[in-house]
Length: 206
Image 1 (cartoon, rainbow, N blue to C red):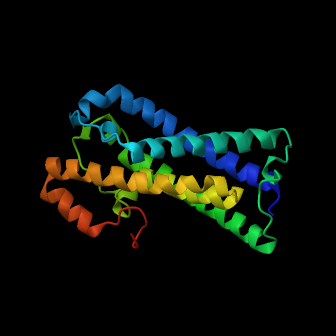
Image 2 (image 1 turned 90 degrees about the vertical axis):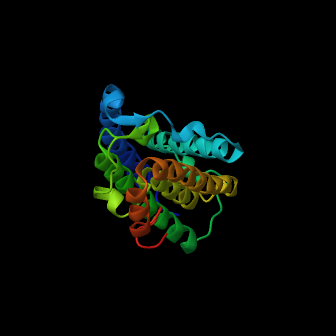
């Protein structure tokens, strides 16, 4: 198993970077939301059981990030709780891979947040369709980052109870499809052309 201190520092750094970039931009978005949207439809208007599971999974990710980072400050060994499965070298490799995936998730999230600047779909339909920056490679970088976090934390914690996080991936896929229907309605051929050139969640793959 990886040293829990290393895991704690990596998770803490990822959390800090995400908040340092996202919170100021969210504040700007909130202040300018009326001048940067042309429709009041929101992606979270779609409420079903899978969406609820997705929102819950996302909250669990935030809880885990804060919990691991804070526990590390107090030199706790929370990551070696008995319910973890000790897989020897394979467990070490899987945890290391989880750290890589989480770090990639943060890069994608920050890249996507900077790319869309104050044009957040969550506040309504943006006036301009963002296709540059991280959106050049992924149509839904913020949703994709959460999917990466789901997988990354499952690898790090190696707790079978966290398998439900994988439902969050299905949930974000479902929400992204709903969002794209709205974007096609508002942007038409422009979005259809963009969708053909860009992958949904994984650059050059899917």
